[in-house]
Amino acid sequence: MNFACKILASFLLIVIPSTKGVAPTAHEVLGILHQDTNVDIIGPPKEDFIDDRVWKKDKARIIRYTNGKPNEEKERYQVFKNGTLKIKHLQRNDSGSYEVNLYNSKGQNILMQTFHLKILEKVSKPVINWNCINTTITCEVTQGTDPKITLYGPRIKIKEGQKAITYKWTTKPNGQFNCTAINRVSKETSMANIDCPEKGLDVPLIIGICGGGVFFLLFVALLILFISKRRKQHRRKHGEKLELRAHRNTSEERSRRPQQHPASAPPTGAASQAPPPPGHRPPAHGPRPPPPGHRAQHQPQKRPLPPPGAHVYQQKGPPLPTPRVQPKPPRGPRENAKLSSGRADHGL
Image (cartoon, rainbow, N blue to C red; front, side):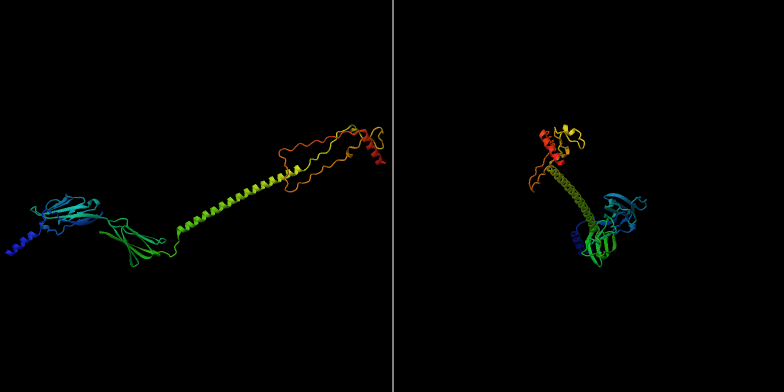
């Protein structure tokens, strides 16, 4: 080596910092949940130079493979001859830091690498829903790690979002729509043909109108029933008033009419005797009593009706007792003689 080469080598040793004691950079590895995955070594040496292979997870050894010795049997781990690690049926707790060390037949460490395993869940198939009444389209996914959703309309890109997106149209949505869900390990697409009529049936509005009509009919029926009851009550009260007024008028008329009682004369001795036979003249010594029915009866005079608007006294309480007719005193001899002479003249 000449002098110029020595100077260049010394300069490189001074400028390039030493990597001794510095932790190697971890390589990221993505795994799919519930599937098998391989952790491959980057730039591995030839298999003939590798004699021993050791894998660790979080500084704890999980499997080792050495030439000429039986391989360690692990249920979920497997190591190939080139040093690749296979993890079966990944679980969420399998994520973490993995380290591999390769040794030659002399026991020298010829390679050491670190990997960071990240478990991701595949996205589910997007579900497209639409509502012709509200003119909305919804696309959503139920599973997946960090999904990204994109909604495409007829020849245009409409909207992007996470997990679920909703888009509202100003007009009725018609045509073919696609929804794509994607993350770092999977991709799913759904398609839907939407055909909304221009004049759709507004079911909530129809139900509201029908309900309002039913309540209105019930209200009208109750109102009619109430009015009929009030009319019946009014008629009943009016009839009672008319009956009371007629009863009052009848009572007033009865109170205005005079009480008529026939004059009852006490029987006398002459009236109680039997009438004489025809052709027989009464003795002259005494006057003949007149027949009982010949007396003139005095007609009671009716009271004049009061003028209209005048206050009429109405008796309250039970009716007063009827006055009894006082009997007339018996006639004397002179009155009987006059009566007899008058009858004799009338007979002649």
